[in-house]
Image (cartoon, rainbow, N blue to C red; front, side, top):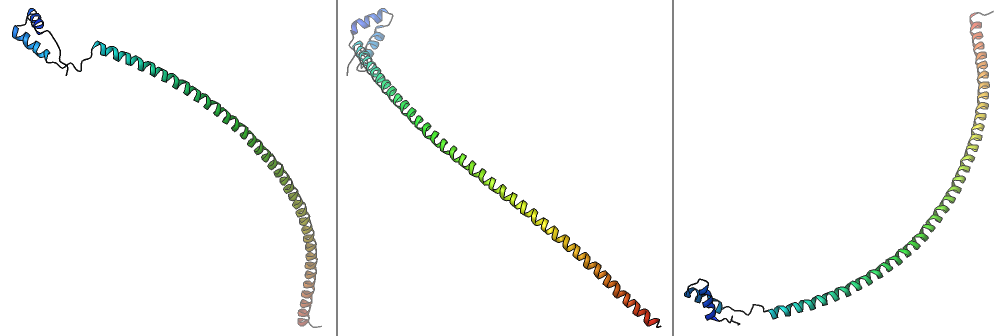
Length: 176
């Protein structure tokens, strides 16, 4: 433990000259005499500390500059890598788009051909259906004509039968 070394006689004399009584001055000097100075820094300690701080400052600045250089290099590497990946992606994407466009064009062509074939089938069906309807209408007209003829014949036959029945009834009431 370091103790504060002071000239007690000179200190008491100065305090008395400042207006303190002798017992007050002695008490103050005794109080300071027992002070532990081991934690008190000297000018030399402060200069050494400043020198250490300056050394650390220089060291930290050098490390920061190294780190900056290293980070810049890594950033440049990353930029180069990312640019290369972007270019690869653009190239592969362009190729995929080209393939998809080709597929779409093939689908358009095949779909157009299929639509054309379906339209042709529909036209054939229209034509054949129209012909069948025409044929059915013709058959219906023939059947209508035949039925009308048969109905006329039945009317005549019914009329003759009725006339025969009426003549028989009249003969039975009016014999000759």
